[in-house]
Image (cartoon, rainbow, N blue to C red):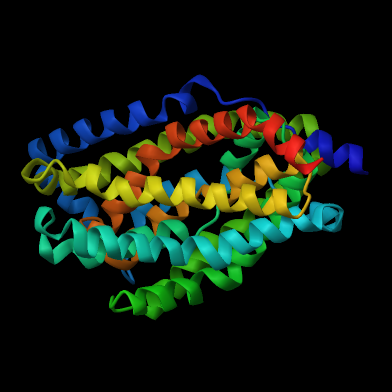
Length: 355
């Protein structure tokens, strides 16, 4: 059983498209700003397709992003959590007790105080809210790539991601509500709960139903073919969503192009801070390096697709919160690849110090 889970958890290294995701995001910025300027009526019509503050076009795109990622998760792996309980404990602590609160503090310090003269005053609370949404959603699918790149323990990675997905169903809304309240942002609880149902609960259930049906029909080989087919669809949906976002953010970005760089500062600090905490705690607790490495990566990365969806639902396509979550997408790949490089280069120090 463990061999099957380990085999299933193995994922290929990062593909060419994913490796250059930051470049594609930068191109989406250019395309979105240009299209928003050339076709304002078309994008206004898209923005108007809302039901209960949920944009239907964006909701469809986000489903295409999220469901293929959730298809990779096998919740049967939760039974193996006990094998690596120290590593699981470290990551749970960082994901749920450190990262959201550290991001709220960093966002408030940098965007709410240090960078205030350089940012549009009316958008600052929205920027901070976007950072909170980004940090409150632990990463799912991309973690498999990061773990594979650093030779992480696949069974631990799979069980930890499955556990985080379950916890998101119950913890995302109250945690976001608490931190948005602390940041003095009005929380539209009805929209927040609807977003949790629409972008977490229903996709998790739908993905598991489809996963089991495909496995029953053609086994793991059939599931691999489905994932290979849906992978590009997921990425295209992500890029299309970004084009929409930037079509509405264009005027603000052109007026203050440094905004993106300023928002990136707390995100970058947060990634290295939480990766370092997870790595250090793992060493202190005697966790094997093959678990400590993915623990640091899971502790640092974010489920940015969910964050983008929640930001759009709660604050709108034109909001600073949506822009802040997109900045997370922009920096995700290069910064996480740097964390992979750091944990690999420090393996000798880690194992020597633990001996």
